[in-house]
Length: 481
Ligand code: SF4
Image (tube, rainbow, N blue to C red; front, side):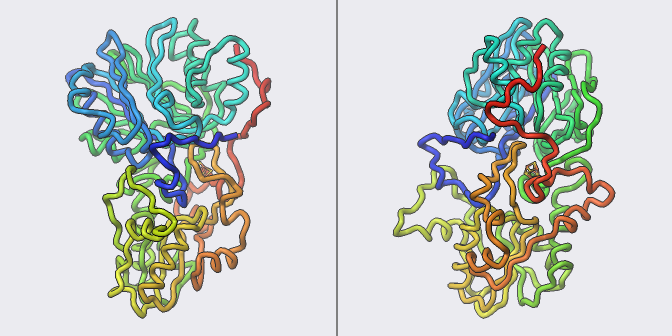
């Protein structure tokens, strides 16, 4: 059901690390009189830049009108000081995006701002709607017009459809219609509203800043702007912030929770805390659990930076094997990086990661990374460290094999591109060129969360999708009012 992203010419697919799943979006909102809400949102989005690098946008309200600026590129590329200076107000919502549905162009950048019968609304969405085909065709057949190709615009059209109701009632109705993963921020002339789907797929947390409030995908963004985290927005909860203060409501009764476990494995920043768990601590436990499941006889534990670093430290701690940074990461490769030609292909990986011969030569090493999607980058890394003189190399992954696509807001590639979906561990081991390949078991991974182990989506590892996925042509399964 998920449309493959058609990327803009200036962002060639080769420039991205296609060997990692990609997060779709980060959202940030702030409400507070006397606060420089545009700048606060700018810094909040900066802290969430890892969740999306293709486009960025901020909508600001001064109580009378909603101003929007958005564009393609990283946050500092889209916003200048002058631009921010012109965005006066006391409410703001921001968005960074990597497209998994809809093409990569400015019209699909968010927030989506539109006028409807009750005023102006801006919407920032993280996640994927799984019954988008049903909704789109029903809405289109009854006169709705779509300007973008994002699934988020379906929510916009639904809100407009329910304009006889108050916005809060309209959002409640939307939550009944829309299936799938959504953490939403909505800005109106007078309010900031946060909504999280009843399964809680994508994270969303609430903080206070002076007399105001901040809502963000991850707590690292609250820390960045000096806000104090109050709590996570609960699955199925709607939080409304306006001049009367803050209040909460629920349109749906709680379902089983299904927080995306990949947030902890790879996407979220290690300094974030979500749904009761500190990401850095969870990653370290993953490494420790790997060491218990696969005690290796090696000289060194080496991370693939940065995604494998925390788990590698955990492995080293648990096993007592020395931790060394044997691969140095170049941190200055941006989106304008020009992919080398066929002749200079290996330079692409070497430019990003350089093996340190004086650490690696003659050693038996355990390489730790978070996940394996296609295996292409891992093969190049293994070849590089072999060239640097390692005697033996084993690869440990702090996730189970990724065998299924994600439909809830993460681009894990098509199933036919997922190497673990089609090859045995032995075959992958040969393809990558390692002496051993070990995955963290799903049971071991969930065990880290103790009594909360059933609160997670693990569909990309076991195919158990918490919410049904619809396909094109599935229209008619439900009725709009
Ligand atoms: Fe996360 Fe995987 Fe579930 Fe997608 S399928 S929400 S990546 S755990």
